[in-house]
Image (cartoon, rainbow, N blue to C red):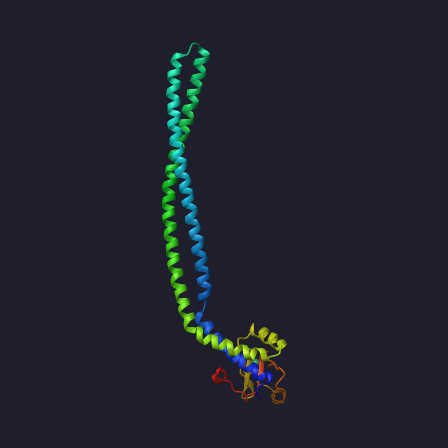
Length: 244
Ligand SMILES: [Zn+2]
């Protein structure tokens, strides 16, 4: 009975059921860790963006203050010059220039005031964003550690399972493997034992004639007519012994 396709299949299915149990222990944890890492990156990007905006804003204010100083000096010079003019035309020209200088000066004063409000809001926003990033980072680390802990505990056992699995996997006809994987998308237990003349996956009865046929053709796959699972005879019993 050993070395037959159906025996190897029963072993493969047994190992896969054990691996499924390990997988269940992880639950959604790997996906969660991945999502948290993504969120941490997103939040850190937001912090960086805000920091850059704040830096630009502060540079703008600094430059504006310098410009205001320059404009003030220019205005004073123009006012002095105005006393020295010899005709109306020149006087008007300087007056116009002074007005322009003041207008520019006032525009900058306004812009600095608005920037002050922007800066205040930005600082608040940045603080919030940094907090969010810190919280997300802490949550990520917690879950990543949890995952790491489960992984290292499972590691050795899972390694053995994969090693034995490969042994049986390589003995099975590749078309059968494809068939197995197809059924696995519907039923985790794609290969099941016949028990009390029934499919142990869906519990529907297997006709006696078919049971005989299965017993006599251990290199052929037979499916349960109800659920489509692959059936193996009741005489084949698989347990942890196959793990060596
Ligand atoms: Zn069935």
